[in-house]
Image: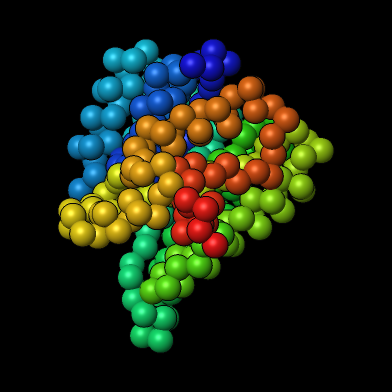
Length: 263
Ligand code: NAD
């Protein structure tokens, strides 16, 4: 637990499920004020449940429906956080999507959808948070949810890999640009995590085993393990850390095929 997170205002995009939800609950446990961005009406009940859980843990929660690809929604998301809780301290750009298509068949529509959610959406979240931090002289924090696919090429997911590669240099560039103002910008690169984005794949035992073989630690990560890295990055314990991609992947990026002395 990180006592300095108590009372901080944390906005999390795509927070009604998976890693975003785990982050919302973790920051609730830290007794922060958590703004839970959810995508559509289907997620409203889940978002409300998260608020109840946060309140039980001693934090405060607020739900906000919005599409992060829409500039006006992202602006209103930040404004709502500030109007309700008086400030913004931590912005977590988490929302993301993927779909599997061989690259020669990938439509421009699918390419644009993934890039506009995963890269442009995260940029809008960064820009609005930075605008607020600079305007109000706040040494705020930004955390972008990247992926091991900012490093590992991923056939059939070229749009996804391109978006996460983009997040890497966006994070590093913004970290460099705003370091003099003591605003910290970092990313997290999860490996394979047990969330709805992977539900179909992990429901198939053969596919699940195939993924586990790529993880030297031997198991698929839990969203709470990613939320723990977000809490640390947001806390003052990481006060000198900026421009980092924190990889949390059970060793997936360590060339697992070389395990046991192969090569
Ligand atoms: P998830 O599907 O549970 O979460 C993604 C969330 O984003 C969903 O709640 C979805 O409704 C929301 N979302 C999608 N488009 C949106 C939009 N336009 N506006 C607002 N919200 C939108 O999956 P997850 O695994 O929790 O994914 C969270 C992040 O973690 C993503 O950026 C993903 O790329 C990244 N990630 C996940 C894994 C993994 O193995 N689960 C690995 C690496 C990176």
